[in-house]
Figure 1 (tube, one colour):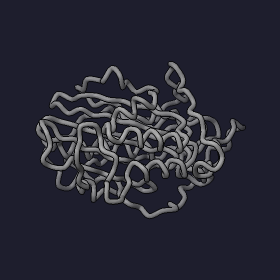
Figure 2 (figure 1 turned 135 degrees about the vertical axis):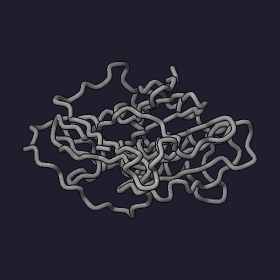
Figure 3 (figure 1 turned 180 degrees about the horizontal axis):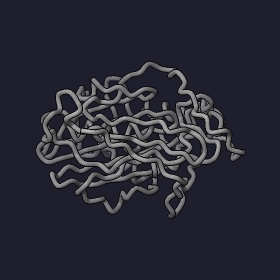
Figure 4 (figure 1 turned 60 degrees about the horizontal axis):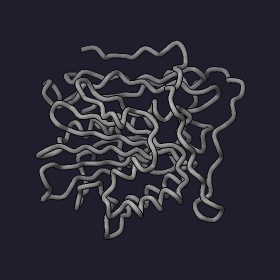
Length: 305
């Protein structure tokens, strides 16, 4: 089969209209990590020469799962230029010659065009690893046949909506961590597929990588207590289903609900990508399926990379 290639748009897409996110007050000096430099101001666009990817400042932890066969195609990083994501057919991937692997059918994906003179987060010149694209346009779209959650339609949401994801015993601690970590925006999308799987994706952008990592460290809390749990979950185990993934510049932390669980199982993963922290949560009656979870996490990670 031939590779399906997405053509690049000829013009920069317009950001989604609607209410703008309410800025969250930043902490007073001395209450958190030092904020890194803000996004550059609009200036004259440079010649359209692709930016050279720079070496990661931290080890590559996990990466693109081979079975997704979703690849980023670099089309340029200048103003008004987008990146496309292409997807190979299953039969072109070793070990996936059949069509019944349980994968969902997502729309063709493309990274949004950037403002004039803005750079992708992990390219030379963007030392702050800032995502300059509209955060809402970096959310993974719902797959074919899914019913979109009317409360999580891909727009801005308040911190209370994000906090509702967490176990009641953890919400106060997470709220305190957010107050100390200077979040700028929160965007979210949710959907339910015909197989009964409920998916929620949250993206939080902070004022710097340092604040994003500080909040990530708090919700993961790698000590004896474990990570901050989703609502309705009483225990966790580390998820090894993404151990073969390779995501340059990103860090991935994946969890399963520990047995015995109730009528449904929950799986969740955090994606650390520069100044942005992603969270993917899936729940399903009986058991949360492995392949759709892997696919959703990796595709969302690619949109942030």
